[in-house]
Image (tube, rainbow, N blue to C red; front, side, top):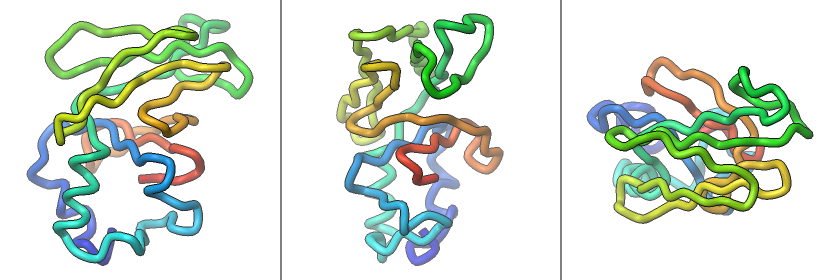
Length: 143
């Protein structure tokens, strides 16, 4: 991202709270802010509009229902919290759709104890003040 203008590309995008790469968009070797596939601000902005949704996904344990966040091996509920619609809870075998900034639908589903959005497995989340929401760790890559 540093080659593409760093975090400045996000400044005017508003209340974005979830970033979702597809499974070929981010490699473990490219962690720590260095995404060699994005060379210009335009490429970075296009990436953001394909892989960012307005809203928030909270992972919740079925085994510990009063606690947000999950421990590996627990059964999962994914709660999709859109900006202007009611919360949708997704359990094993169910699906809800988040909309990327580009307008494309990204399916949120729970399969075999893991939550997925698009083709990316959501492993966990952490607050990130600069973006004003949750930044998800997806398959070992922090976006």
